[in-house]
Image (cartoon, rainbow, N blue to C red; front, side, top):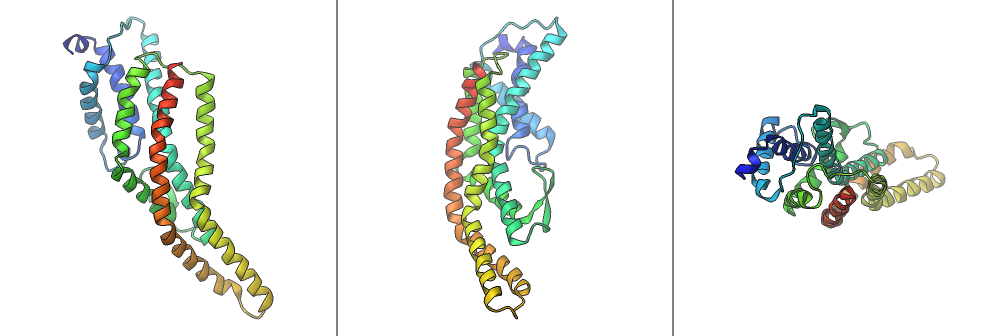
Length: 256
């Protein structure tokens, strides 16, 4: 450990990879956690990992080359953070779809995680997802993956390959698939409700369907949200468990 501490440039590279991930991954990237706390957590985790990280010789006389190595570690942390965050993006996107069909697309709140206005249904789904993530120890899974990353991808050993780019694109596409799977049962209920209102409008033309349909759609939407919550929890748990495979695939792809 003392030998490694003498190589400050190596210590800084380890810290950069860990800190970048801490800034991006859920729970740690919440604005309620000050930046000083994130830096302190990254430093503590860096010191704890020092005995497991092999010493590499780095020439810091070439400033441009060293900044390039820093960029590689930052990119490693960004990719690992994206692989985790895409699940939560899918959950928020599912909430946006549900809000639109319920007529709640204009009811927005500020989300401190993404630092923008999102629908209230997306916010509810996001809070539920974060709570479930903590309950099933998803944050420990991330720390485990971060520790394994130094075994699979040595310092300055990150490579951008074609397989890595293809897999990241596939993860991006999965956001839409997962969002539709989460919102699917509610979409079906709301679709059947709209079909029923359409039939009612044709059979009873003197009835003002718009006045009846708006509160009915909202009521059916909230009922569907409550009714499908156990299934959502079970499905989200499966997503988090699959995250271990996703992170491992990314690590080996970055290792070349």
